[in-house]
Amino acid sequence: MKREDLKGIFSALLTSFDEDGNVNEEGTRQIVRHNIDKMKVNGLYVGGSTGENFLLSTEDKKKIFKLVKEEVKDEVKLIAQVGSLNIHEAIELAKYVTELGYDAISAVTPFYYKFSFEEIKDYYNTIANSVDNSLIVYSIPFLTGVNISVEQFGELFKNEKIIGVKFTAADFYLLERLRKAYPEHLIYAGFDEMMLPATSLDVDGAIGSTFNVNGERAREIFELGKKGDIVKALELQNITNDLITDILSNGLYQTLKHILKLQGVEAGYCKKPMAKPTKVQQEKAEEIYKKYLV
Ligand code: MN9
Image (cartoon, helix red, strand yellow):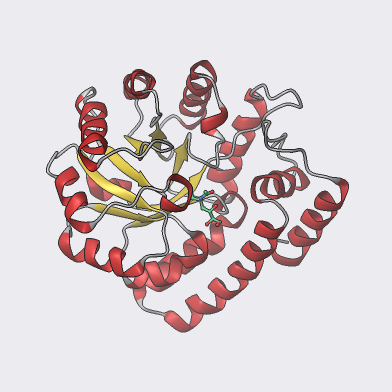
């Protein structure tokens, strides 16, 4: 896979669950189709935070990876997040998705325990070296508590199979340093609300949850930002951030799923411990949809 081919806008794919937390396969396929046909994204990031991956059994993770590939075939690029505190599971999933034909794998930094950087490096090398595929580091310090420095990224990038990072952080000083230090590596902006400033630092793409409903506007921001048309891009980022602020205050994944339902996509429920949206949340989601997305 050429790095060039992995640039662009990737939706962090939502998963549809039924009321008991079982994967709704048909619903998840509909979310995939919506992203490709209506949001016109360049690719999907499967099994990330937005996919509620860390709440799932290995079997369910495999089920989702398989049905997504079946639905997508080669229409858009696919990145599979396989990272897990159970490194055996991560390797098993890395092999599974590579066999299925995923274009790259990604792995969240190991969280919960306070691992040393040497341990984190070993985790990445072990996963990357277990398959004939490229790996993108998933860095999301606000959820994992793990911060990686410019020099430490350099240590990880010594492994030529580790080709980039999904950078879900607001540290734009670090982002600028990384871009300058590693011009050949892929850097994806991970916070949708900061996409425009990230484009000014020359990121290669963006991976985000809100692209499931706001994909077209996101793509425009990205393209305008890359071209340097900041005034127009900022107008769209302002609208986008009004939308994201409302979505975040109403419950991120519940609201995204409810908005999809209003568009006829069987997006289902979130999996426990995430709660079902209340009546008030559903009404608010409908308001948000009508205000920003119709
Ligand atoms: O994949 C997403 N992160 C999480 C990245 O969901 C934890 C982002 O797209 C955010 O959801 C989004 C809203 O803060 O930027």
